[in-house]
Image 1 (cartoon, rainbow, N blue to C red):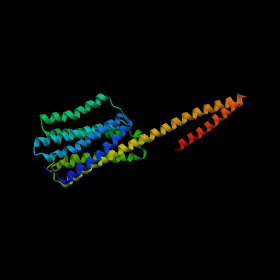
Image 2: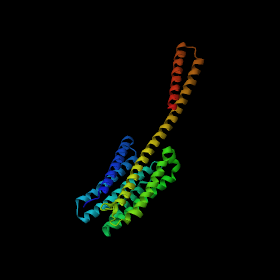
Image 3: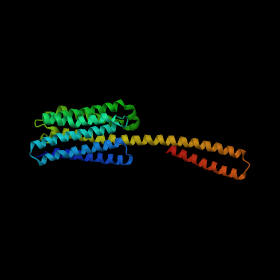
Image 4: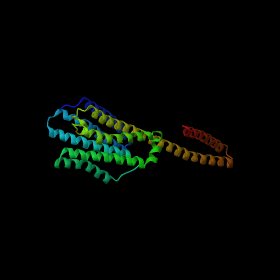
Length: 285
């Protein structure tokens, strides 16, 4: 079977953007070993795999194999989307592990059961429903934790608003535009309607790239916030310790008649003053 050139181009753009997301998440996980980064990494990996699956359609004329590839494509996409959004949500909320596992099993098994018992189109529509449900839950999480996210990303919260607009646009395109195409099928892999193909793949690419940018801004925001907290916390604690040392040194010098002790005390006080200057420089950085 043949694909429209625009479909191939759209798939390649998605693969490139998802590959970048996979590399970034892999680097983050390698540096932090954090669970949220492991979920994001696996999520991006499944999104990447789902981008390659449609190319299998080109190499077969068997419609049953095409149906299997179509259902696997949307299931892999939903797995990746669910894990990625769960990982992002863990910046401000933790979920019980059994709930996540149950939700993931439903996302995987429900479409497969419907596919085996009924029809591939019904199974794909169910998966699309899950996809929209995941997006809605993500948006709810974002706006119910708006204050905390604004503190994290500060100046870039507008990026999340832009992502929201594109997510809504993606849903609108999938519900009201793409299904009206005469030769409609999920992903428009066999479609010849250039306008619908451009609308669909543009919305997918925009959501993917903006999602990656939001992820990077969240990471940057958390890093800067943590850095400032550590800087203030440690400089404050060290400053208190130095004050105690200065007080003790001054007291020892006042009551000591030994030149050797006084000389050592003067050295301690001088070094303490130098340390105080260093703390001031750290807090100004």
